[in-house]
Structures are given as structure tokens and as C-alpha cells.
Length: 172
Image 1 (cartoon, rainbow, N blue to C red):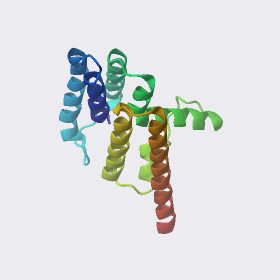
Image 2: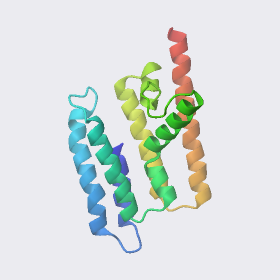
Image 3: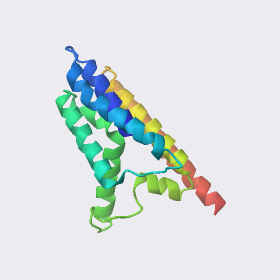
């Protein structure tokens, strides 16, 4: 996901009226580091990044979005998967009377695993979702078109989760 987001942010910096080549180097370096790590982390994973690595990537992607001159809608779309996951967790845990900082199995990737997705299927689903969010985020189209594309993506996510839930119910 970081690789895809970094590439989208680099493309955004390069497509500005005055291409920002030096600013694009930061997300391109992140993309290169993420691609190198991915060789060992793609399922079946042989190494794991851990919280420190994930937090560094999140911080660096956020900083890249700010210095790259991305509009808020672009940033929200490019970083849509982790942002939506965090928003979902904060709301659902607060409504359940739990601390949003408390751990649990309610992250999207864990819910997909519990529904019967293999680790590879979860990763590929995240990649497809991140790539589609990133593409919509950096394509220069009218805001209404971006909103419609976002709605279609939301429907796809709901359909995939509903399908997995139904499949899990049929097998149990």
C-alpha cells in the first residue's frame, strides 16, 4: 500500500504546472524502499516491518503529500485505505464503549482473514483498492467524477465483504 501511495504522490508532484522533480524524489525513494521490502514481505512473508517501520512510512507519506502540493481530496484518496481503516476503528470502538487505542481484531485485514480470505487475497485486495484510490486521486477530473468513482469503489468494497461474509456463513 505504501508503494502505491508513494508512486501516486510522486506522480502528483511531477504533474504540477511546474514539475517538482526534487520533491518527487522523496516519495520515489519511499517507493523504492517499499518495493525492496515487499520482495521479502509478500505472502508468505519472511520478514515483517513492525510498528516503527509502518509509522515511519505513514509519516513520510504524509510529509510527502504536504510538500508535494497535493490538494486535500488527492491526499485523502491516495491514502484512502489506511485513513478509512482508522476512521472505521475510531467510530466502531467508541460506539462499542472501547478505547480507540485498544487493540482488537477489527482492522479490515483481520476481518477479511476471519471471513476466509487467504493472506495473499487480502494483500491483493488492498493493492487493488489502493491503486484505484490512488488513480482517482491523481487523475485531473471534475470533483463530481471523483465522487462518483469513490462511490463505485465503496460499493465494490461492500460487495466483496458481503460475498466473503456469505461464503464464510455457507462453509460454517
